[in-house]
Length: 271
Image 1 (cartoon, rainbow, N blue to C red):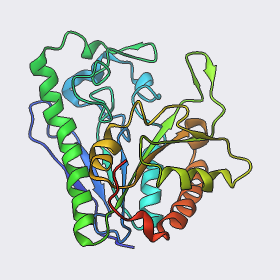
Image 2: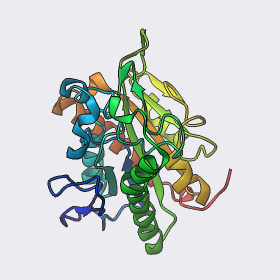
Image 3: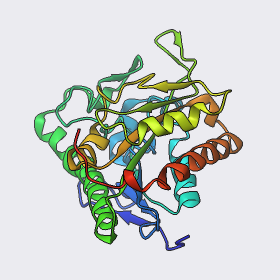
Image 4: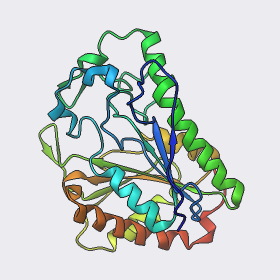
């Protein structure tokens, strides 16, 4: 295990003050695994100058602002697998790092029925400044870290961690975890098999979201390069405490270790 201190990524912008945290965090940069972990929605932080985007603090602790528990799972996997990881430093309400800039949901006016006043009435210059301040530095960090791993040897894998709400728009979601993928099945299908070996788990294949519809990070950084990739969505009520997080770290680490032992997955292949 590489115990070097986390690397923090800063960006000069009038949107960020001296007390604001970095736009993203890179941990275990020199990890030995040929694997990069990402967490696009790891943080609920809003820059101080944004005044909470006009959203009540209690709301900002809920799922509308971040993927609850996903950052903790990512950090746990980084430690268990000795893998590099890149985690977002700001809330998806500031800008969604897993959507193409310009998409109406990239800087949302509302999230699950919650109005986001600070995102309304923005001009193109304001939106572009958010892209330049938060979006591109995160994706440059992902790109550079993935390139660093690739320069060391075999083509690396990309694995992205998210979480989802137990109920959405009045419908309960029974899945414990979903595996999201687009065209490349090399990581997703074995992972689904590993997870379904646990009889008690309800495992979704492109459920409750589909990687065909929403997979900007894995498509941009891995799919386009022919690197094996997928994302997972873990139900948030299973990540409410440290024991729940640790359980999912154990489940995913065991599954990924079995997959990482298969050398034929480490090659460039386009689908």
